[in-house]
Image (tube, rainbow over all chains, first blue to last red; front, side):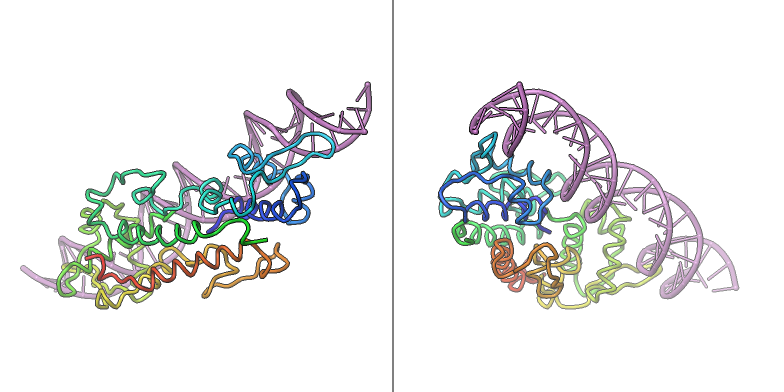
Length: 135
Length: 135
DNA sequence: TTAGTATCCTATTAAATCTATAGGATAATT
DNA sequence: AATTATCCTATAGATTTAATAGGATACTAA
């Protein structure tokens, strides 16, 4: 299942991408428009800012805005930040590789073989998708 | 993340598929060979039996055995039983469709659009994989 | 028919993760 | 100086996952 964090994060990013010209939008406004718990959204936007997707402005007239062009925002990057590793098991992860402690040999492991294919399929989708595809 | 249930279930199925001629294998044997908690595995094998993948035999010389030919066991079916819906959100699920209550319009929803692509990619993998690929 | 073996089944506990909330600190604007 | 809105940490609540316990049932073989 996709986490609500990712769901909310994607919706917020899309909303900001559809806004014209980097004008800051307040958390409250996004939360209201997209039916999201405001406080929860707050922490999500914060992490998107810290990872370089969003900029922010404090005080009156402040809010969040998209830093890059929507077509420059790759879903691979967004998903890794919001949802975590794209691979479903660490032993096939490109960015978060880890050996399974219970598995003596990856090459002969059925889980490894299947999940390798799944990872490649998902990567292909995410690499070919940007925020611009959803506006 | 792939659940341990799915991981264990896949490993057990592969192990049984590599066994010759439908000879029953005991839970304890599979658990030992594949480093799996025996009691946990017990419940997994039970559900695989109830859903028509495995047969079982009680008493001495009993155990579990694969009912179908490995190449007849599609990963789509296995994954749906072990891991649940292949779709990451209910609004793009073929077999478990549900409307999002917080989302007024699926067609204009970014999450829906992206997850539709992901679902198709995953389905393509699972439909083209059978147990026979892992022996 | 009896002892032994192995699955069957339900209930419960333990652990981990996810979701949401609270409350004040900080910085910018007017 | 007052107001506004993000910043940040901590924590509580809810859900899901993983594992365990213990006895019931059915089969085999001596």
